[in-house]
View 1 (tube, rainbow, N blue to C red):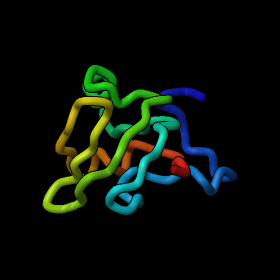
View 2: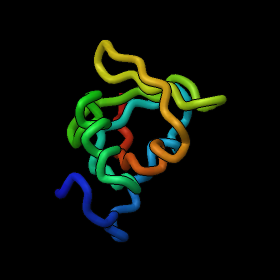
View 3: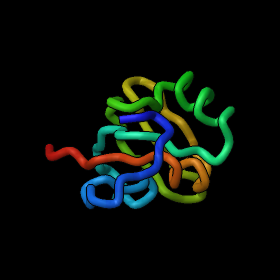
View 4: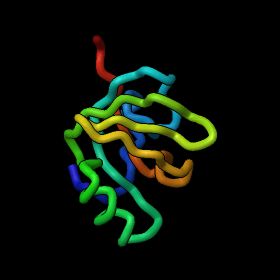
Length: 88
């Protein structure tokens, strides 16, 4: 799948990162940032298709863990990261 393509309507298991519950683990499927530079920045931080993330907090900003990295992410960004939840 493309890292910045349009979201496929048929895959109901894929949803924005911000829709996960706190503590949920998910695999990044694709990114749809509003600005091209956001894609590069997210990639540099490890938020790439295939990466496993854990949502640790939703407010005031989302906190996402990727491996050993913990990131605070604005809601606009969490809405641009599409994930598929993982079963534990």
